[in-house]
Amino acid sequence: MPVQDLTIPADQPILLAGSTASGKSALALQLAETQGGIVINADALQVFDCWQVLSARPDKADIARAPHALYGHVPYQQDYSVGHWLREIEPFLHSTLRPIIVGGTGLYFTALTEGLAEIPATPPDIRAKADALSHDDLLAMLDDASAARIDTQNRARVQRAWEVLHSTGRGIADWQDNTPPPLLPLNATTALVLDADKEWLLERITRRFGLMLDAGALDEVRALQDDWDPGRPSAKAIGAPELMAHINGEISLTEAENRSIIASRQYAKRQRTWFRARMKNWVRVPAHTV
Image 1 (cartoon, helix red, strand yellow):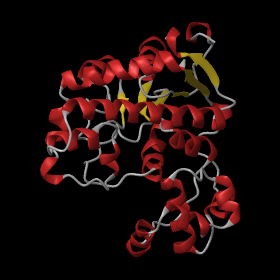
Image 2 (cartoon, helix red, strand yellow; image 1 turned 45 degrees about the vertical axis):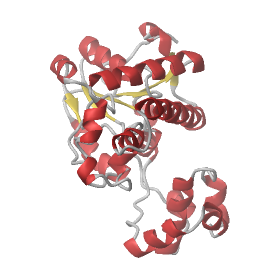
Image 3 (tube, one colour; image 1 turned 60 degrees about the horizontal axis):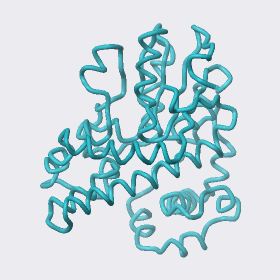
């Protein structure tokens, strides 16, 4: 359904999910200007203060057009999780301004609308043991219920499930089955997901990364060279490891750009897979119409 054909109740929060480079931030800004509201970030990398260009965070001109929140407010050295995000977004759900929550981190939207299990943090010694194990070893030691529920091809998801089991004695599936009520039930929102044609999106990803380089993405990464830690959540920004490899003399800029574009395309594929599996009741909006 084209966005101009949508009827959005004035009193409902808007959820707007979309793949990287799909145009979701521009649509959120348009909705805020025409229908009123505050644009709230639901992207795991746009929270960090180090990534203006590389994360495609709204710039000063965008912020001047409508209120924005939860962008660039977390120091890059800090950990940040979906639990942090839920605690920070809750006050905005009770504001007089209509929340327009936009981003590409599917887990944020799922936690917001379905609830999040309050699993204790993983102790450092358990994390170190998990880091030393292979993907296959981690998977072999999971409980059956958790292994059946997660993406077993995703190392991060498998390791997280292993850490939960070995630090709490309960499988992650058991924790999830005892999840508290959501902060914002889906049926109390207008939930939109941009549906992007694959070839259309891939062309936009390629063009956008070139524009990011022109806008100073390399300088953003270079600024962290003396304090770079690939294990930090902020270091997961697509393009950051590749550009840092170039800065350190390991690969050419062309190779760094090519690798970044490939990583962006792979990320977009994972996002589309999540949206199809977890957002079946959301309204599909053709991305090329926005």
